[in-house]
Amino acid sequence: MALFSKHEWFSNIKGDTLSGLVVALALIPEAIAFSIIAGVDPKVGLYASFCIAVIIAFTGGRPGMISAATGAMALLMVTLVREHGLEYLLAATLLTGVFQIIAGYLKLAELMRFVSRSVVTGFVNALAILIFMAQLPELTNVTWHVYVMTLAGLGIIYLFPYLPVIGKTLPSPLVCIVVLTIVYMVSGMDIRTVGDMGELPDTLPIFLWPNVPLNLETLMIILPYALMLCVVGLLESMMTATIVDDLTDTSSDKNRECKGQGIANIGAGLLGGMAGCAMIGQSVINIKSGGRTRLSTLIAGVVLLLLVVFLADWVSQIPMAALVAVMIMVSIGTFSWASIRDLKKHPLSTNIVMLATVAVTVSTHNLAIGVFVGVLLAALFFANKVGNIMYIGSTEIEAGREREYQVAGQVFFASSERFMAAFDFKESLDKVTINVSNAHFWDVTAVQALDRVVIKFRREGTDVALVGMSEASATVVDRYAMHNDQKAVEKLMDGH
Image (cartoon, rainbow, N blue to C red; front, side):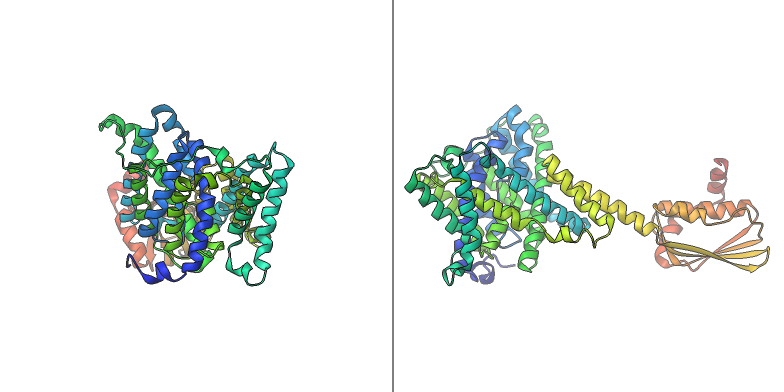
């Protein structure tokens, strides 16, 4: 894939430029807020957002996706910063990047195949709820002006696109931010602004190596945090890439995205920023505002830095109500409203997986735990469903002497007990034929169940014949089966 593919960079210049401006403005309060969560100076989050957005524009595998400092990552840093300080966080950020690059080369993004659609839907809905909940502190214990400004912002966002010509030209979130900032500056009303969130940096970031001792003790301190940051960062990035794929009806290179995230985090760590990953909220803002290519991500990062360093006096006057309105729009647009309608149509197991993912993610504020619970439940439901797709019938070939059992379906750990229970070991027969031409034996548990069936029949003096085994099943059975090994059979029978 060419680094400067014209299609990936310059096929949507106007849309990408405007959307990049919107994203840059929306990134400022979030980067400051996430810095506060992590317990570090606002500069750390702002520098991280600039570095990650700019680097990922070149190295990422998903054009149009926004990566920066995120809340999910900030939550994991709290203890490290509190107990060891900022320098150790920067070292952990570098190690996180190394792990993510390794994950990209190991093609671990392929594991996304095991994340079911219901888990992705649950993840999306949980993030939408978390984005909305994050705005509530800005809407509690405030004057009526804040509510009026927020409602006015939402009105502009949703009604401006209906205006002829200009409504389709300018992204409504950008118009919302500009108009409400002008209203605030003219009226001088007493409401919170970006400047109240924290001091904005007044210098460009500089290269610095983390000031930590390079020894095993340091590695042991940062290793668990780096691993957690790596997993959560890649999970959120892969999920966000999947969502942007759906929104834009295009595909992306997930393994390249893993490596890109790693390179971006190393860059952030070397310029005094904290680890970050893809941001679903900002990515949705970018797509909804018309952003499609790598140019939108690059512009978002560059403009962010220019705004906070050179136009801090103007940026600090943006009312938080304007940005709250934009983020509420994001949460409404992110939530999968179709999933509520589909609760009636979808199977109970699918609904449980989706709702469990939402509940765990929202309650723990930890994306990794929510997705893990969702994947685990989906796997259990799937194993149970496949385990029930098995039929064992029998035909009497010769009365009182010979019977044939026909096995159809999947025999593995979840269905092995049902497989064994289907045979009548008390029936006095000379010969039993087990026809497995329509069955598949998947694992050691299935082979052990087959062993027990054959050995039990032979112990009753019945001759057993296995017929119709497929080549795939035979590979597993020949390797692990014991029923033709006399010593193993004696050992197994001694245990009964």
